Every structure is written in C-alpha cells, then in structure tokens.
Image 1 (tube, rainbow, N blue to C red):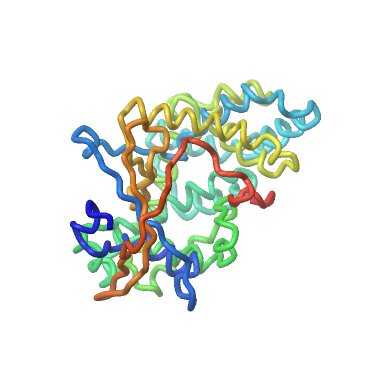
Image 2: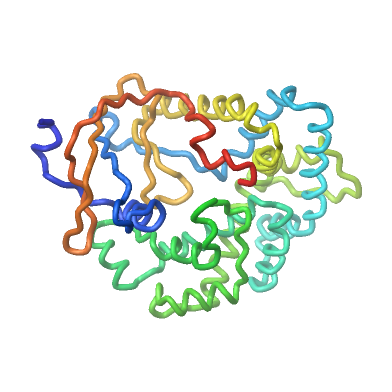
Length: 358
C-alpha cells in the first residue's frame, strides 16, 4: 500500500503538544473529530542534524524593512495615522523601556513585583510585550514542571507543553477562537495562585518564579525590541520624532507596525505583498542553511514544520485515524494522499487574519 512507512510501524505517537492541540483546540473530543494528516519526509545525510527555525520575536527588523519597502501601498492618511499611533505608544512607554535598558546595561537589580506591575500596565500600548510575557512564563513552566504528567512525557524525551496551554486558556478561554497574545496580561498574583493550585511544580517557589521571568523578560526586550541588541543606551530626549525612534527601537517599531496593520480595514488588500516577501526571506534562509524541517525557535516546544521551498524535498502524506493506547494518542496511516507542498501563501480567508480584529 505504502511500504516505506508501513514497513516501519503501524502507528505513530503524537507529540504531547500535538495531542493537546488535537484534543482541546481542534475538536478532537467530539463524536466526529477532525481528520489528521501524517507527513513522511525523507532526509538526506546532511539534513538529519540540521534543525534551525525562526524566532518570531526576532523578526522586528524584517517587519520594519518590509514596511519601508511597501509603505507606498498605504494612503498618506493611513501612513500618517500608523506612524502617529505607534510613535505615541512608544514615547508614552519610554520609562519602562529605559528601566529595561539600564537594568540590562548596568546589571542593576530590579524588584520583580514592581517591574512586572509596570510591564502589565504597558502591555495595552505595546502589544508585543504580551507575547514576551507569555513566552517567559511558558519557558519557566516547561523547564521546572515536575508533575507526574511531565515525568510521563520526559520518559518519552519530550518537554511537557500542557501546563502553559492550560494556563493561557484558564485566563483567556476566548483565545481558543481567536488566539492573540497581545491581550495576555494576567497579574502576578493570579499567575502564582494558578500555578500553585494546579500543581505543575511540586515545590513551587514564588520568588524564584518572579525573579526568573523578570530576568527573562528584560533579556528578551533588550535582545529583540531595542536596536543593537540592547547595547545602545536609550538617550534622554525631550522630543522623539518617528525617525529618531528608528535609531533606538527599529525592531520594536517593526513588531508594532506589523500588528497595527492588521487592524486596518484594507489589510486583506495588501496582506499578500507583506507576508509573501517575509516568507521569501524565511525560505531563502532555510535553503541557504540546508534546512528541511524548521522549528519555532523561541523555545523547542515541539513545533516543527516543512520547508516548502526546498527543491529536493521528498515527501508523502497520509490520511490517518486516531487511536488511544496506554495513555497516549496514536495516528494510524490508512490512505496515501496526493499532496504536493508549494512555496505559496494560503488564501487569507483560510487564516486567522480573516478576522480583522486579530
């Protein structure tokens, strides 16, 4: 039927992240769950240990450069309003960014409780901070969770993704329909109470948790949002023009513009141009590095993909049925599908961005 795959084993265990997504996010618990497709990729000897990915937190400069190249797609009024909104939000948040920058450069000690409170107050103006806040919390839970469930997946050489997944939906159940971390800002007290109650970490130490995520957030802000990876000291200026902001916050401007554009009513008109150019840069990077299976590079959660622009890609796809065995989910290939991956963006109507509020 399809010997190369069937000759190895009759079923394949889902990674715990895939298991959670299937069960909780795609309707896998329904009487008629969605189908699942299994991809088999043949790797040459040079590709086996060549796993690289894309850290979306580091795409700020790419977002900004694409905007600079394509800003002619916006009207003069749209361009003026866009620069005004992102510029004003950064200027109003300068005290927070100066705190992060000075703490990083001078190795100052900052009180986590005070820092995190200012962070939460700043997130509504600087939406990318919600993503950084979440990634820091998720990393801590993945590193320090020691529950029975976590040990179960550790034995399978997997990092347990379920604690942070459960946490985010406990605070924001609406994210299951429209996932957008720009609104992620639970208080530190609520976070600590939830982690303690759920028992993700048997001897949960609040001070260690708050200190860890504070240091991680400061690191990520300086490395991904401030120009020159946080080594440039933010100047004391009474007036900040948009051009002056570029000198210190080019990556941050890129992230903010990228997300602000999604709220524009005309975004579907030029979505293809912005995202296709970004995809071309990503695919070029993967091809240059010989990457066939890329992964999400913020933290190795288990999210992997396939490079569709690889000219030597050898791939087969199979429709599967899902079975449960010994507390795990397994995918059993039942039918080979005629699928060919091509380096082209999916139509906007099939993506989350079809909703302009995303």
